[in-house]
Length: 211
Image (cartoon, rainbow, N blue to C red; front, side, top):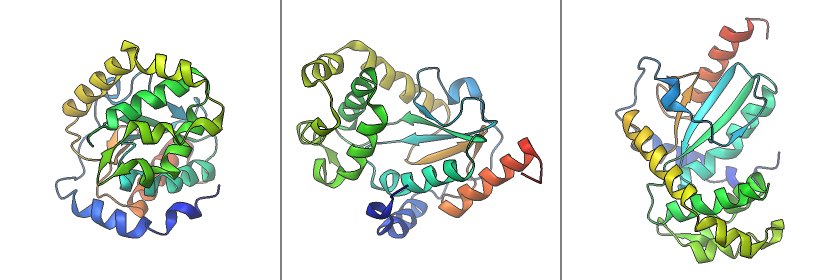
C-alpha cells in the first residue's frame, strides 16, 4: 500500500483529533444492529471475525490522515479483520460527497472513488467546507460514466442512507470523526496505537494467542 501522500501530516492531525475526543472512554459493547447496516461499504473478508467500524466523514482531515494506517491494519490481518465505513457528514457539503461515493459504488468504482477523493481532499474541501463541483473534477480518471453518476446522485437512496446513518450515530453518541468501534467495543482513547491495540486484543480473542 502506498500511503506516503498521507503520512506526513498524520501525527499532527491525530493529535488534533485526540484533543477533540476528551469524552471518549471505555464503554460497554454497543448494539451491533445499530452499529452496522447491510448497505454499509466494507473492505476485507466477510468471514473475518474482527470488524472495525469507522464513523467517517469524507471531508474530515483526520479521517483522510488515518485511512492508510487502517488499511495497513487490514493488510497485516488479512482474512481476520474487515473494515466497515459509516458516513457521518458533519462537515458542510460532505453529504454531497457521500452521494458521489454511493453513485460511484453503483458503477463498481467505490474503492477507486474513495482513494481518489481522499488523495485530493485538500483541493475540494476548503476551510472545512466540501465543494461537490470541485470533487467531481477529481474523479473522471477512474472511468465513471459522468451522466449516470449525476443521475444516481440525485436518486433518493443516498439521501435516505445519510439520514439512517446520522440517526444511528446519534443513538451511538458519535459526535466527531473519525470514531472507531472494534467488534462493538468503542475505542478507549483516540489514536493509531490505541486502535492497533484494540484490534490486536480482539484478534487474540477471536483466533487465539498464537495468531
